Image 1 (cartoon, rainbow over the protein chains, first blue to last red):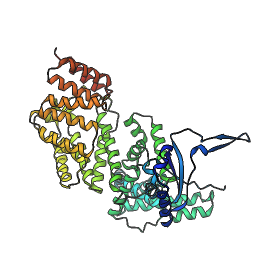
Image 2: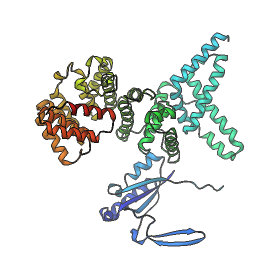
Image 3: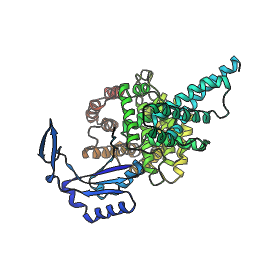
Image 4: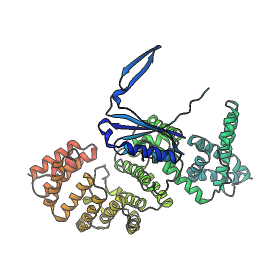
Amino acid sequence: MKYLCLVYLDEKNLDTVPDSECIACGEALRRSGHSIAAEALQGVHTATTVRVRNGKMAVTDGPFAETKEQLAGFYLIDAKDLNEAIQLASKIPPARVGSVEVRPIRELSAT
Amino acid sequence: MNEGSAAVARATAEAIYRAESRRVFATLVRLLGDFDLAEEALHDAFRAALEQWPRDGVPENPRAWLVSTGRFKAIDGIRRQARFVAIDDVAEQVDAIPDDASPLDGESIEDDRLRLVFTCCHPALSPDAQVALTLREVCGLTTEEIARAHLVPASTVAQRIVRAKAKIRDARIPYEVPAPPELPQRLDSVLRVIYLVFNEGYSASSGSSLTRVDLSGEAIRLGRLLVGLLPEPEALGLLALMLLHESRRSARASPTGELILLNDQDRSLWNRDQIREGSALVEVALSSRRIGPYAIQAAIAAVHAEAARPDVTDWIEIAGLYDVLLRAEPSPVIELNRAVAVGMRDGPAAGLVLIDTILERGDLHDYHLAHAARADLCRRLGRTAEARTSYERAIALARQEPERRFLQRRLAELHD
């Protein structure tokens, strides 16, 4: 089963976790066969929000909601069940200073 | 089969339902991988038992019969729905159900009960949902009974349970006993749920308790189940703690529902059997050398239980145990309890210094029992004006009516 681990961090804590640690974490997950994709994101000041209402596109600056913790990156992992996903998520370095939201992937149904 | 033995078979089926339904359910959840499917299969199996046992006799192993009948009925149900879904999906769903050649011996069935407990108390579920799901699925209470016990509408409880089951299914919370590295943390969550259930029953035991299920009794039953399945020191400690608290039930409130403090309780009303059992469990838990907060609290309750009169209470032992507890689980409330014990051991002045330090820090500023404890120490020191101020503050903060009335009586008894 696939889980998306969303890494949230207070922007002022972004520098507290060195990139080298995150690279090592991504490599470890790839080696154990759990990683599908993992990326870090640019700061929230670079974000653009897109909505379509009544067929018209509206583009606004910034994220949908102003919160203290910002989405800083993600890991798409393959785990046996939620327990394994939680164990893997706890190894993601920013879990120590921010938080990691673990969300199961929903299979879209064609019918 | 004649009329008489048919009636016996029917009575047997009903007795087995009462004693075994949660065990059978726990195994069906493992086999079918879904709570709702298992619940339906359980009811189908018992309906079949009520039909067949009076006619054909009670099977040799009723529990195994119920499990395999439930499993069969579930597969049958999935196949019947096949008309509405793609054949591939049905085949996949049926194939995923393990055959019941898997052993149904006592041990694997008990493992299923433990799996059920750990799944219902999974920390990924909200605390409210953990409690509701445990009472529903492990204890077998109805949604209405759980709602009455928590004084919330039945629809609220039903929604909590539906959401929790959806999360178990959609996020794939596994049906398993956690592996040793995760066990201590996961056990904490199970113990917390059981203690929460116990305390709700304990604090609600006065007033409108007649129509409410005995949550304390359910919690003790859960505690016994857990100790039987997983005799970890803290599980023993929690069961001991609950038994020792429960032993004072009939002494802790007057017939009119007025609160009676430990000091003023008629100790002849204490339940000796529960004290004996609780104290023995404390001994076992303490001898494990892996002592946790529940076992220490139980040890404190046991010291109180051993005193024939309040004035022979071993306050040196109790204050010492609070030191250990404070190291194991630092919290302002434990610090407050320790201060009260020190006040008993070294005199009220020593206790007052400690309580004032806690209050000055602001931690328990709005906690009525901190002000009630301070009031009591001031009263014993003859500092009546201060005692009055503290009682008034405690009364303003107390939320439960019997507690408020108790504090008001104490305030009225103060002499200028």
